[in-house]
Image (cartoon, rainbow, N blue to C red; front, side, top):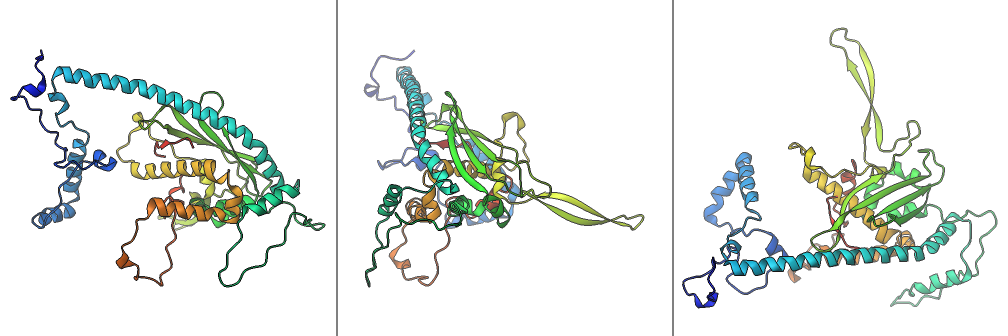
Length: 411
């Protein structure tokens, strides 16, 4: 039973300091709160590091031991008096109510997104008609498009203003619409460009439209719809990919990705872009006769996007499975879906013209690249900048089979 004497009047009772409490009052960052602290390695410890490097089994054992310490209590909360523990439990109760409000907030955001998706719908329909060539853009539409691009500035010589295209007419028997619009737009997205192989391009030339719709009712998620014209590779005129979110919001108050499902592609004979036929000769050891064996081997392809990886289930745990690789594939698959939903579909013409690439570079500069020291400015001046991608240099290879349950913010 706890005493009623205030804790600050009991000199003999001193709550132990939590093991990760800093000696200074510097604010803790999110990384500092989520990672165990490890002392720096000095020169005297170099032999121990070499021993770990030369003994993988020992290193694995040490890693296992360290992993077991993550999240373990320091004993500070358990040492508090009961009346203070009771207050902590009260705060937890308030947090439960806060989580319910967060869930309602996310549901209202989702309903708002659905409302505006209906307002976007006629614009996307009009866009699809112009791309297909069934209609021509109006005078007003062309003028708005011309006015949306600021004039190019040239310090040396001012350029003459461009002639307006608002009154231009298509010549007789000219090609309809905008050929290869979606193929070009997808290839101008840094991550998707690495998923599209040369073999895929002929099939993607038949891609006439990409749409997005939210799942009906209260179910959280969205569906991507790829519309195709007739082509030599598959018979589907519509391929869909559906992303599902969990019913409960995540710790940060955002919807949490659960899994994705894609349509089965009905490939025409010998036209499967996700596989290739390998031919090998086998020799019989007894008769010395040879035979030719053909087998289908999976290959990298954009169309693996419709066969997404499946998150592992608790009852399917396999110690031999490479969960790190699966996590990377899940994360990439989820990120590509979100980029299609939030960036490529709404701003398709900017990806087609390349205008979106300037904004993509700005995002990469802000998020992924640290500022260099002044001393490095003079180095490698003649070196071309390395190509940068949002999802890593190995994006294409990661999709060769086909997201980490990531938390996703409703935009």
